[in-house]
Image (cartoon, rainbow, N blue to C red; front, side, top):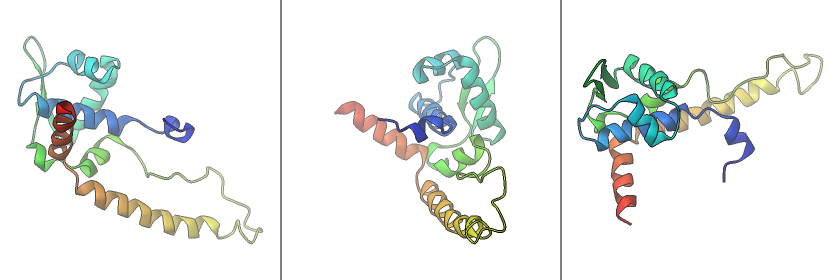
Length: 148
């Protein structure tokens, strides 16, 4: 079940991983945004936006027109979740409030700096873990799940 907090977060990373895994699964066959959208169960416009970000990062290449479509630009074992995240997400994992806290408050004057230091370490740990997972790993798990 998706929590309320998760529902408010961006789904671009998950969609991008889905797209890249589907492209890997099809082993070089160029896929249209309509076909990919059918797998993701979303609008092709959403897929085209994600594909644009992935192409800009050098992860996919697209050919327009009749017989065109999108393929992977690199081997699946070379594409990490960290790269995908950097390609499709903007900003940091954890946002900060738009307004500074009250500098006269003993908590307000230092809490963001303290929490920020902890969250920076958490983000670094997440990124390190994401660097260890490739699209090839995801594809292997998808294929194994399909056999069960």
